[in-house]
Length: 265
Image (cartoon, rainbow, N blue to C red):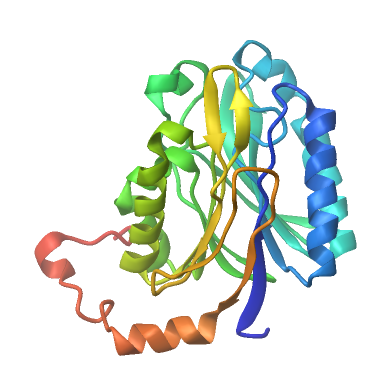
């Protein structure tokens, strides 16, 4: 595996409740990206349907068909694709990020932190475990939107060997500056790549600004989306990440014996 891979964030205006429209937008974007040699792409949060709360249980019934189609597409395109979808499990509904690696499911992560100001905790159940998984594009860690405010999660992913952290999101315009600040902070403090895909356009009174980003372990914004449907992409060089960790040895200078461990022990 080459140390350098092309990664991308896919942002588009999610059509509330319209799986057909959203899957078509995602497929077209992924096909375009494959022509540029992209090996890893991240889709937005709840990308197939948006937060159509009244119909979310019914929409989640279609998620197996959506993931099946995406598995076939990733096999055809020889890509790894990450994105979150409504997942039904028994009587529970989750906001789940699926990792599809060239035709197989490489893992799924259920959002840990539910955003109560938008009633996410009323309609969805929270996950109870983190995910770091090996893929053909490298070792990936997963987080979703509001998780960005919880640095403990990102440190745990990094400690478990995540080289690239993928973040599907629906982050609204009123908190745009926080998005930019927290994304860079999570990448810098963990010295790893971060690929964040945001929604864009309007959903009712709420505006989503896009601004998807790919950030290096040095805190450099390697690529950034504007306000419309875009696919910002960049090269992620893991050899450069390793070199930077030697240059600024924050990992070996940690003091877990003082402030505790976050590696599950």
